[in-house]
Amino acid sequence: MHFSTIFRSFKNKDMLKRIGVILGIIVAYRLLAQIPVPMGDASTFKEAVSNLLEKSDFSNFLNLISGGGLASFSIILVGLSPYITGSIIMQLLSKAIPRLEELSEDGETGRRKINQWTRMLTVPLAIVQSIAYIFILYQSTIAANISTDFVPSMGDWVLSVTAMTAGSLILMWMGELITEQGIGNGISTLIFASIISQLPTTMAQLGSALFDTSEGTLQLFGGLELPVNPTVFWIILGFAVAMVVVIYLLVKLNEAQRIITINYAKRVHGNSSYGGIKSILPIKLIAAGVIPVIFATAFLSLPALVGQVITSFDSGNEVGAWLTTVFSAPSAANFTTQYPDGITGQWFVYPIMYFLLVFAFTYFYTSIIFNTKEIADNLQKQGGFIEGVRPGIKTADYLAKVVRRLDLFGALALGLIAMLPFATDYIFIMTTGAPLGLSISGTGLLIVVTVALENLRSVDSRALMITYDDFKNESQD
Image (cartoon, rainbow, N blue to C red; front, side, top):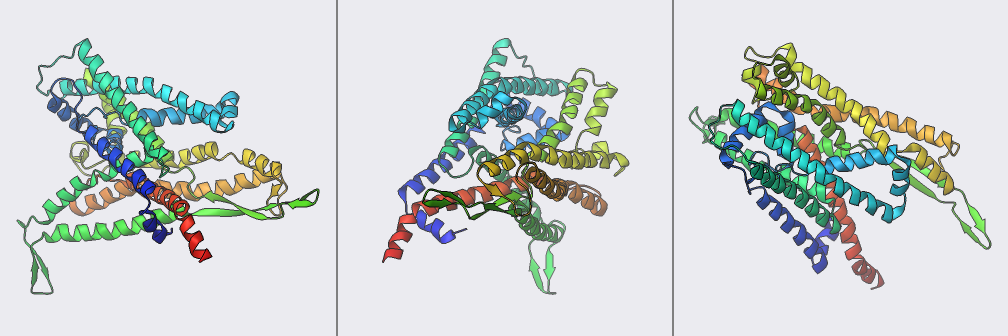
């Protein structure tokens, strides 16, 4: 990174304008998170949401990436998930349907058409998810015996679903506006802002616990007394050190890549010669990013949501209770109710399934986004080859072998990152008898680090473009 160049680019009005637009959109996004859904008493549904968050890991994850929109029962409750789901569906269809695959390879025009279809697909997905969430929340208020005299009419349903769908589409539009500024991906930036927005609440809770001296103060070096809780102080210090180490490892894993040297054959056309140069083909260690973790979370949590819907109609249904218990991630919220006698064998079921699904989805998604046959064909058309490997099928087989080896380590690394919250809870259960609930899990931390690095690279690239004339004038002088 050229940090001096980035700071120099801040003198450019266009650069400041782009950054100002992005910051303004993020502020507007956070304001939207405070507007409640127009359906009855918002406080009643907030209580139902808190009950839902205690039972569903998927709901916790959606609340995280929506910046607390789910917990506050705001109009952006659905968040960006319909657009993300639509994008994933279109990517899968582009690989399954030859016509769409041709369109995706048809340059900017084809990509614009696919993007337009993705936006169109987002609308029905947002409507369906809005109806599902309102239904589950309303049933949760009844199942939890939360006092309410409100019975939604058809007009209330239409108004609420329309507001939530509009909120999701506004977020999609905001994400595209950020992308147009050329400083990182807009959707990723909004998710990044959502996760970061949870930090002040966490810091306030830690600060309150740190300065609670009802159990004593911290004694240092025999005579120095600090007005802080000694137990909480050492816990925070340990987590701060662990956080630095984890972030360092995440940066290394995110930036790790295998470099393959590509040679281009020399061609003679008339009096001119072309080629005869070398290039590189970088293959990232974790090419799939955080998509496998999101897929695994959604796959495991949907049965728990189904179980909640079943138990909302029939509280004594054994199937619903089994689905809710087995497919709910063990956490600080549900530990005392589900494990009153401490850790049992069932506690390890969810983490093991989670790890295996992250591992499997890493291979699956990498195979979708990294088409070795297509890369080998393009290299052959351009006259490129890998030294010691024949062009065509042999090159595709070689690249597939390299990707499989990288996927093995990358899948293990992603799985271990996803296991961080469970490992932390297990340690605290063994030492204190209760888990520690963290607002930012290994998944959230991975998203923050990945998006921060990508946006920083985008800022660096634009800063180099802006300050190019300055470097050119300095070299001439």
